[in-house]
Image 1 (cartoon, helix red, strand yellow):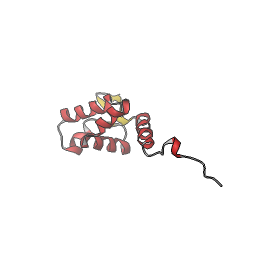
Image 2: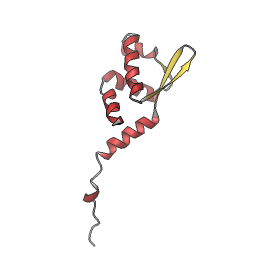
Image 3: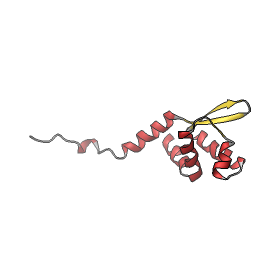
Image 4: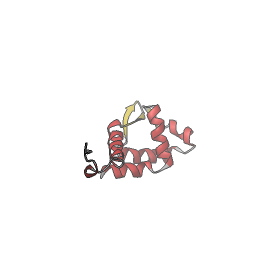
Amino acid sequence: MRWAGMLRALGHPVRLGIMRRLATEPETCACDFSDVFGLKQPTISQHLKVLREAGLVTTRRRGTQICYSVHPGAVLELTDTLGALTAPPADAIAPRAS
């Protein structure tokens, strides 16, 4: 269950914060997150690794820097999975008698 790994990855406040930042600022360099979250670079790198392994972010090398963006397909998959939790069961939907 791929989405379970995504939910685990998003369960940490820093990783969720990184995803929120990437949603508004795609192509963000890993070094830019240290100042935002007040964490050292190795800690940020570990959080980004978790997000990458969960399939939530994509990377692109720009010179010596690695830039991160939200993986839109993964977010849509997770959104669909969570949305299904609010849908009524198929057998509960019955036509009304006139």
